[in-house]
Amino acid sequence: MSLKKSIRFLVVKSVGQYINLLSLVHPKKALHVSYSLFSQPRIGRLSKEDLPTILQNTIKETFQHNEHHFQTYTWEGNETKILLVHGWESNSARWEKTLPYLQKSGSTIIAIDAPAHGQSSGKEFNVPRYAEFINKAVEKYNPSIIIGHSIGGAACVFHQYLFPESSIKKMVILGAPSDLKTLIDNYIKMLSLNPKIFSLMENRYLENFNFKIDAFSGAKFASHITIEGIVVHDKKDKVVSFEEGKKIASNWKSARFIETSGLGHALHDDDLYQEIYSFLFGAKK
Image (cartoon, rainbow, N blue to C red; front, side):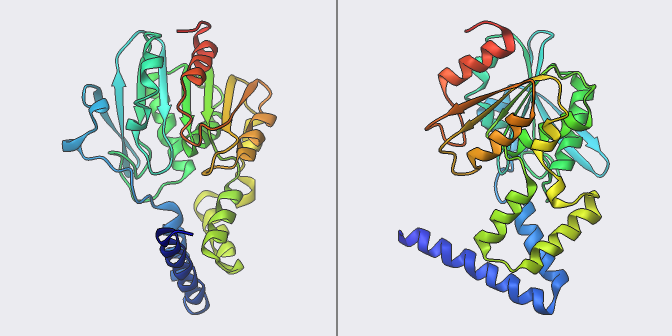
């Protein structure tokens, strides 16, 4: 193990030990710390004054939703509209390599910044709130296609489960996690947290979102989806397990599963983009 990795390992385990000790004397504070670490992104913010080049020449709109606002960026084209939904600790600029392929179709393309990411408001990220942002964007723009990467893909699956009668006709999910329980289990394992923390976090989700952690499953949601789709996952994805993508695809009856190898979590690849283009528009470009 390199020195850098050794230091990171020690820091992570030290944080875990602190939370474990805190849970014995101050469980509410232990929950606050552990939940914040799990739900608050550390990177991915954008400033209006220093936008990445790819986002500068776009139509920018800010929408209010309850106490929050979210940001969208539009590349104008024809009446076919595509909504792009990025993942954790990212922002709308992550689509820079994808855009040239989609723009060959002449479509209008809209990208959205997630809660607590890009120029959208908030400190906390969670899939239910992201799905609400997505729904507001779908109601505004009426896209027929939605493409989601990583946890943005999970939010797209949840959105389609909640709003099956929307304008969306085709969906592409890239490297998405399925089960919230898997994410939290991995988080607890990484920090070596005690079982009490899981119980505290489960109660938090039940109080805030009215569901149990093990009930929040993309695989379960996908079993209700009737539109056509593609689920893509790389066998060597080190961020989200390959099995997570398989779970979603196996339960989504009208979806095709594309297995890649060596593309990692980002899934940027010419051949893959050609295949996605063929699915969306019926011809290769």
